[in-house]
Length: 359
Image (cartoon, rainbow, N blue to C red; front, side, top):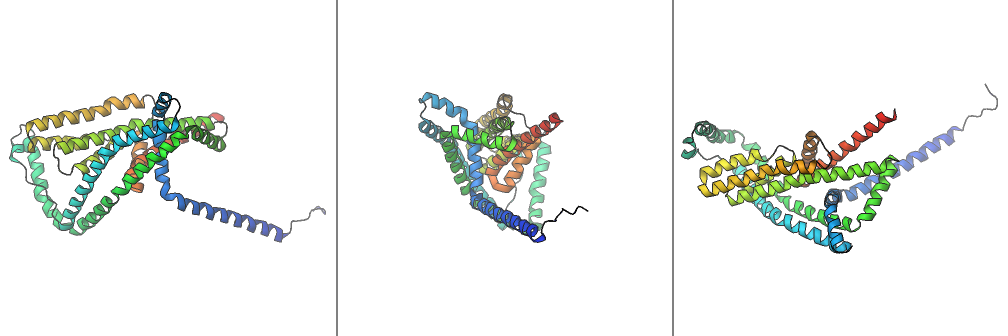
């Protein structure tokens, strides 16, 4: 043993550990408290950032057109986009709420039934008889099944009513996100510097690369996946209204979800086309058919053009992000979840490659 070694006093070590624990505890409480205060604004803020990044090239074009007047360019761009999106969105949302309330009342009172097969369907060549058999089976057996599932249907009706009641909040978040996007566009230069500064602080010398990748990923997914999905859903909803398809708002919502998760709107529009041919006049059915063929081709034409210029993200990542976001935060979460998970996937992929290169 060395005679000069003097162990530190036990009381000093204990007091330092206790002091550090108290500081960390207070810091954790403050951070959790701040998070709880800001939690209602997180989704609109993230959605606003996504919108701002996605439409920034359009903003730059308007900025050059108006001689560098940032406020005027941002207000004009946000106003035009809100006008183009809000009119069909509000119309379809009101229709969706009406459809959901009607469906919920049918569930609550056990009145949800499928009508008998029209005779015109049975006379179709080749496919008429198989479709009629499936239709008859659903029409006859569903009523018996509904009698056995009365408690579950009542619960589903209550859930649908609550979902319809929250539709108005989705519109408010939608508008708030665009307002936030407009503010971010006005201060886009400062926002760009802040994003790169944070990225450099977190990652180091590769921070700028990470920030540029994040921008490219957000822009690619927002345009190539979400933008096309919104256009398809809105056009499909307008077609449902024109052709007098029952529950048009619900079918438009399902088209939106299926388009975002990369399954496509064909699952919804093909049965709708058959229904219109059965129940409507020939001219309306033909116009509705052409309209929906154009909608389905829109996905095949625009998506390769947009995604081909951006960052490729696996469909599974988009699917999981959209479904997880939908379950967590509703319709807005459908968009935010897809982009956030895609962004996380790309950044994690680059981080892994950085680790392999350093070895």
